Image 1 (tube, one colour):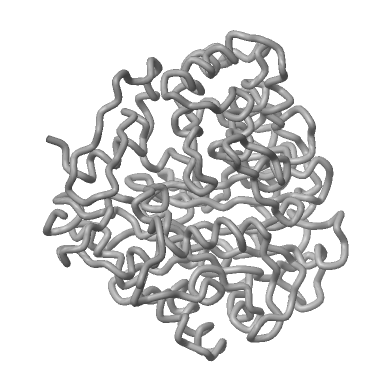
Image 2: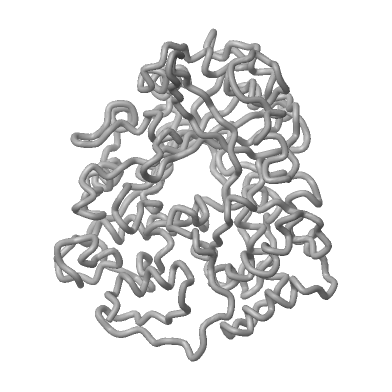
Length: 507
């Protein structure tokens, strides 16, 4: 007999269509017939959408009704921090210098910054790393990769001089607690993010560039399962009760740059792409310095070769859960189109059919991901337009899966939901889109979810966040976070993560 956790995890991954009971310790009901298409063999928890995986993807983590929680948190102190009084201690120079220091490589933050944006220029550029026309980066997986882009001009400027007035400088605009992304296996404690914006974007909409450093924080005691992450959860929860923004700023600087007792600092190269043995983070960009508006992704890697000094490099990689748009075109000539339309994407239908804005998701094989997510084009990453309205084998394949799970959604609804899962969709293309089943995708701030613009908050000026975050995504993260905070392993409460794999005692 499967443990309760195993049943939940199989349901999450879509390996079976189990219907879970709401009670603790009761048996699940097996469906009469499984869906005819099986999920790809290379799926893992980490390969789900970067914004919806881990404990936050488990429906049991969100109470179905009112609760009498002992611990509640203020989301603007414990989940999303955009107060300028707190962020003033998170200068871009400090972050970049800490990355260099953690690498042990003989370089400077300016050299690293220049190398980063030299990737948006064709060879030879500065001659210090990959470029947008380098084999393996140009046309990643056979999809468009604009080269050059104006962001590459930053390879020739210094963003660290005169940071309070330099238009090329970067300002911190948000800290994000993503405990909801913590692995259900307890191997990591979620992601902890810092977002920065190019100062010029405050006054010039044609010269905007936003970057977000998304660190995966390892669990130092994985044998304890998710319980090993409780000090991190308690740290963020305690910020709710600290009314002094300067005090909160000091605590957060310690968390990010020094680390809690027993934990490594968040800001370390291993947490942004350099780790190869376990989940690692990434750096993502929202690029507006030229049309089309584009989102890209990078890993920070230290490379050492014999007889050569070690190097520290930003490496462009595929944007995760962002299939190349042409794969949704029934007439596509892309060599992977048949595999995608006949097998890979139909296997995601049950996952996309979940009728909850926060928990429907999908897996995309990295072979199908593009190197950029275009948020302006009506074709490149606009899956709905690519799919069209005509009858096709692809449409039939999707409908077959919907019929197998008894869903009344349409193939168009499923493709619209897939688009909302892409970066371009979530940030722009799917704003206010009808996804079927009564779901309407919430709106960003026209391409961003946190902005250079400010509003007045309880502690002075703070950066604005999107309606999507305020009304939909943050309440879900809050519920997940508080569910964990208000229960402990072995306390007799039915916890979604509690099994012999995670905790000393099962539910």
